[in-house]
Structures are given as structure tokens and as C-alpha cells.
Amino acid sequence: MECLTCLSNAGVRRISPGPTIFEGRYWFLEHAYPTALKGWLVIVLKRHAEALHELTAEEFAELAAIQAQATALLHTFLDCEKEYVMCLAESEGFYHIHVHVIPKPRDLPPELKATRIFGLLGSAERTIQAVPPDEVADFCNRLREAWCSEA
Image (cartoon, rainbow, N blue to C red; front, side):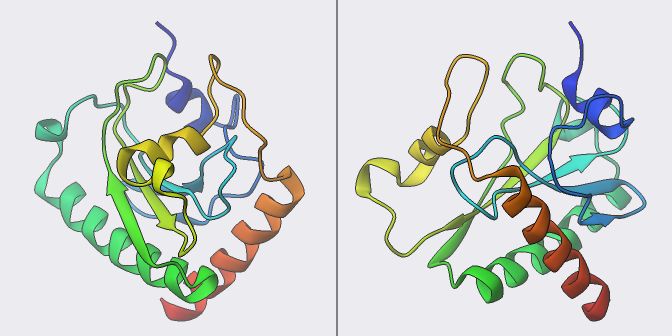
């Protein structure tokens, strides 16, 4: 099975239409795509691992720091009610460890709350009305600028 995340990390077949928002020592911060929700971020491990217990203490430490800054920026930029953080790594082609950081809009319909928010994320089996690629790229650039100014 081909690892789509490894291909994206290598620049062979990028998943996001936007630039990488942040590159740490162990992780990338990217915008998920396709998604109907602007600001759906994904923290992606640089090396291939498929379970959280495979992470080192250093990888966990950097992950925590990225989560803290990403959730703060999402709240600032999108005025979201809260942020969801999930690591499932179970979809075909996406077993590679990645952590979703999802802004929960204040007006999110009840049928999309909690894990049902994944209805806003497209896949090979399910198409959605995605945020236009240029809008995602612009958002990534704005977050990237803010990230650099806070670092």
C-alpha cells in the first residue's frame, strides 16, 4: 500500500494546495484538503510511523508545542468556538501518523459536531464542496506569516 502522506511529505504528490505552514524538526503543519472547512489543519510526522506508541519523547514534545500554537492561531483567525484535536490514522493510504486540528465554528450544525465533523473532509469515496484551493493557499500564507512573527 502506497503511503500518500510520505508522498506528500516528499513533495511528490502534495495533499494541500497551500504551502507548508510550519516545518519543525519532526513535524509539518499543513492544511487538509479537500475540506469544506477552512482552517482544517493537519500536523504530519516527517518520518513514517503508524502508531502513537512509536513516537519519541522529543516528537511528542514538539507535537504539543505545535498544537498549542496552531489552536491559538485558529481561534485568533477564525474565532472558532473550540478546536478539535484527533489522531486516527486509519484511512486507506493515510496510516502514517498525523493529527487533525479542526476549528469548530460557532454555527456548526448539530449533525456535524464531534467526530461527525469528518463529513466536511473529502476522500476518494466521498466528495464535498471544498474550499477553493486559492483560498486555502491564502489562508496558509497568512497563518505562516503569523507563525513566524510569534516564534
